[in-house]
Length: 257
Image 1 (tube, rainbow, N blue to C red):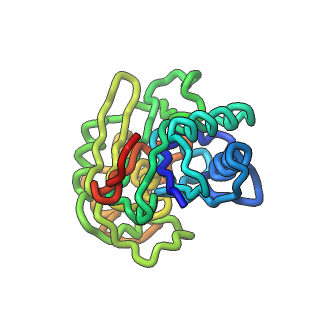
Image 2: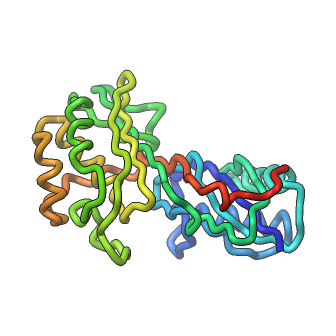
Image 3: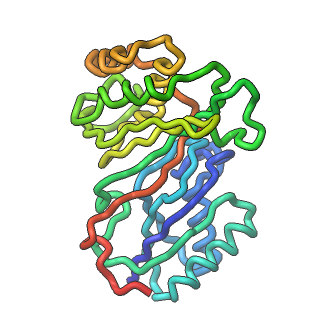
């Protein structure tokens, strides 16, 4: 049974997140319904990392098993045609045959996120629901300096959602960079895996540094407290983007077409 690796882009606005839920339409539901219409099969599509309601993706990765070996460009184009017909803001950027052992979630070695803040007095008309609007001035340099204090392997309980189901709060944060591009502040985070709401929690705490409510040293103090009550306000979901996933070469080794 051929396994396909899909790279998926989506606007998370209006979706309940990646995973099927009973309270609204999910991205997973949209993709699986497109597969049903295209191939007449009802497979479960597994992704590299579930996203919450309102969170966007530039390069989500998923895998799916189909009974027939289709041309990969046919898979991509047919799924996009059905997604478009259904009115979904979801696009399959590419489809590739994958080795049987490839698993979108478990084969991943690093995940990359970006958080966008529009930092100006005027509201974000074009980026409404695609970035967090913060009207007060933010010091991106101070935010970046604070971000560097929590890199590495730590107990991230402070930046973990109360409902997080991960077995351990310990994670290794490989990258947390902050840069300003005009009126926009971008936060980049990379790690093998993240806790539930970890990136949004860190972004909200960094905003406190940027506006001067926290000192740079307060970011590390909050981490060391291992106490959710020491976290800054959680940043809204609509500013978060799942950017891409890294895999070892052996996980992707397959004749490409």
